[in-house]
Amino acid sequence: MLDRSKSRAAGAAAGAFALLLAGLTLLDVGRAQSPASGKELFEKRCGGCHALDRDKEGPQLHGVYGRKAASVESFQYSDALKKSKIVWTDETLERWLTDTEKLVPNNDMTFHVEKSDERSAIIAYLKHDSGK
Image 1 (cartoon, rainbow, N blue to C red):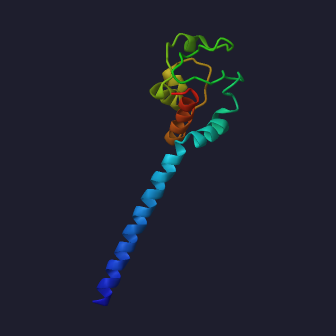
Image 2 (image 1 turned 60 degrees about the vertical axis):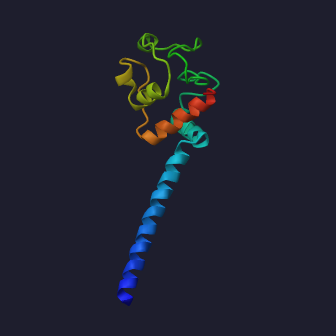
Image 3 (image 1 turned 30 degrees about the vertical axis):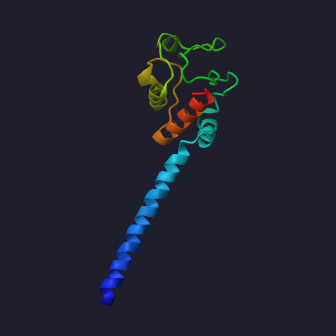
């Protein structure tokens, strides 16, 4: 009988550990989409070419969410992006950050973000920055 109790206790402990790991994973995903971590990811992954407040190699991105693509007058965009008629939303930003060439062939940006949670966090940050 003592062996059965030990076995049940071990099974319960293993189940509790699995639930704890699942909970920690969910917490980590939630954190990846917060504006603060989105800002960090934006600075790390996008900041080399983009800033919110000024043009760099790429256009300034303040207020980009909800804006028509290629509409910052101070920046020289590719003809392909000018003709795209894209409005930057969750869906279009997700597709853009996944594969710019697939969304707009012959555009000038060749960069992409491989991890979907990083794309989501960056999009959430840009959306927050745009007041949406």
